Each structure stands twice: as structure tokens, then as C-alpha cells.
Image (cartoon, rainbow, N blue to C red):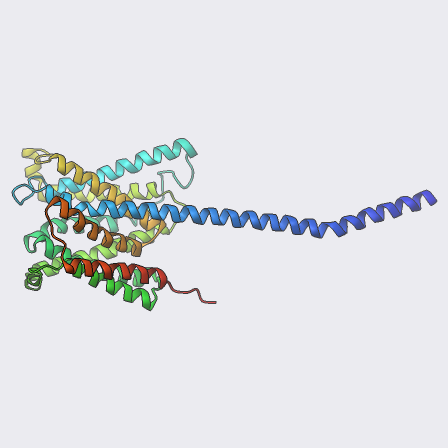
Length: 356
């Protein structure tokens, strides 16, 4: 009996000791788990910021050389190649690059639900809309030069900034603070000021066709960009290369229709690549990489970042033009660049604060 009493007392002591130690152990375990989650979250946030920075920098550099390559691709002031075949080639190259990236993903991660090409009708049915909008906008980008010159086009192109901000608010329901709206207006004013020269007043004498095309291009660009961001972010876990593939497939189809309607005879008689030069090939490669960079910015950042990236690219284009075309930087350029820099700063510090 005494033996059993001693054993019971020992058992009670052991259980009591475990009861005393358990909360501490659970606390340590909980602290360790929380610390691990915090570390993982910080690491993920750092990687996300790094990815955003890389794709934004890539977009800025690619866009800054876009206008230069388009100018270089002309001969005697006109395009000797078919604009529609060039646009088709851009879409085809983007599609090929997306497939190559997917193939590498399949080799490293295997085929999963998020990176398989097979999809539902509901998912793929939304891609024709931005594809046709981008096609029309890209075609207008070439034909607007029948009514405006390059400097006037650059100034009118700044309408994209305002249209993107307004459509971003209406379609995506994303709220911008008053400071950010002010920064947007400053960005538009800064870009316009940086492009002013002694002959800029003739922009006001732009024919009505030029104004209409500029406004339509701004609305198409803004709506296509915001809509694309919406469908890309609708399923965040979906591999970006799969989403790009389906978007570019429809882009190829619509541009193929444009070739048949507009340049069918020329393509049949002279060939698909008639008039292409090394600069034309570089321009197509640049447009393809720019398109992929834009979609990645929309996936990992947003359209506002894209607008600021392309605006800074415009300033870089002017700087590069100093060395390539003997372009002289004016006082207006430096003033406009300063305003753009202030706009970038105001946008970064003026983010809406989360409501408590």
C-alpha cells in the first residue's frame, strides 16, 4: 500500500511538472512559429519588391528605345515594311517566348494546375477583348503620323496618363489619394513641359483627325491596360506565362485578320517579310520584350507603376537622342524632368492609409 502511495505521488508530481512546463513550451513553440512566419513574410515581401523593381526597370529601358527604333525603321520618311505583319510578328514572338518560359517551368516544377495550358472557356473568353484593343491601338500608333509629327505625337501621347488614372479608379475601384491625383496631374504637366520646343505651339493646330486618333489611342491604351490587369490578377496563382500565351494567341488571330483585310495583296505579291531590315527586326524584338514586361508589371505591380515607368522612359529617350540625333536639351526639358521627379516622390508618399 505504501509503495502504491509513493508511486501515485511520483506520478502526480510528474504530471504536475508537465502541466507547469507545457505552457512555457507551448509559448516557446508559438513564438518560434510566429518568428518563422514573420521571417517567411519578410523574405516574400523582399522578393516581391525585388521582382517589381526588375520588371519596372526592364520596362523603362525597353520603352525608352522603342520610339528610336520606330524612327530608324523608316526609309525616306516612310515604312517600307507592312505594319500589320510587323504587329503579327511581335505577337508571335511574345507567344513563342512565353512558351519557352513555360517549358522551363515545366522542367523545373512539373505541370501543375496553375501552369498547365489547358483552361476553361470562362477563363479564356476574357482575353479577346484586350487583344483587339491593343491591336487597334498599335495600328493607330503608326497611322497617326499622317496628321502629326513626332514631337506633337509625344505631347498628345501624355493623354494616356490621365485616361489610365481615371479608368484605373472606375474599373478596378482602386482608390488614389488626393496627393496621388495631384501627382498624376503634375506627371502629365511635367512630361508635356519636357517635350516643349520653339515649334510646340503648332500642336494646337493639329487637325481634328489627329486629336480624335490621339484621344482614342489614350482611351484604348488605358482601358486595355486596366482590363488586362484585372484579368491577370483575377487568379493570382496562375502562371503569368500561361496568361500571356492566351492573350498573345488572340493577338495573333486579330492581327492575321488585319493582314488579310489591309495588306493581303502586298503580302501575297511581295512576301510576308518584304521591306524588313535589321532595325525592323530589332524593333519587333523590342516591342515583344516590352509587351511581356508590361504584363509582368501588371501582374506584380499595377498600371500606375506602368504609367510612371513609361513617363521616365520618355525622359531617357530624350537623353539618348542627344547622342544619336544631336538633340539639344532645353530649359523646358530640365524643368519638366524636375516636375516628373516631384510627381514620382508625391505618388510614393501619398499612398492612401488603411482605415482602422
